Length: 181
Image (cartoon, rainbow, N blue to C red; front, side):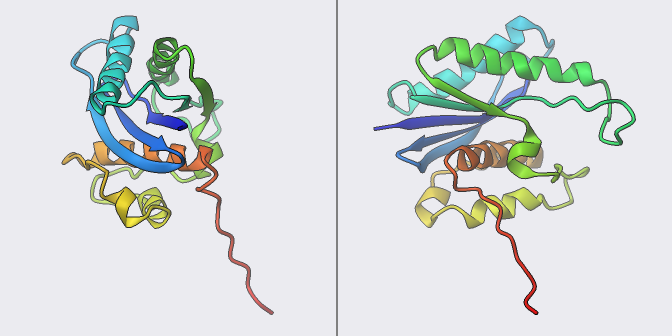
């Protein structure tokens, strides 16, 4: 049975989704126990928390790992906000997970590849467009497997982990609407 672990990496916590034979079997937000720092130890601890979460499910090591890698835009592109160096630890979490799952086939991509130009909302009072798109592509049984966190921003991380999995499973294809003449 093929299994996929898809993640939306973060240094303080990781959105995770587990798939068996192309169906979502579990999804959640996994917090990092380390609350300060953004170096190699924090990256490794975040990755280990994901591994611990996965093996609590009683499943064997996943065959595939799908991760989102950070994309740093050129200054002046209008998409740059904050210090792009802050994204480097996110890649560290991806690398640590790859090291902890040496037999898994690794798939990766930047956010734009799987969700287009859609950004996460600027405030928690705004709705996240991707969440609606993700929910439309899941069955009721799959939706029932998701542990939605109370924190809205963590909910976005879980949504992205599911979206990344859907994309790599070819279930997140964009639906195009054409006007009739």
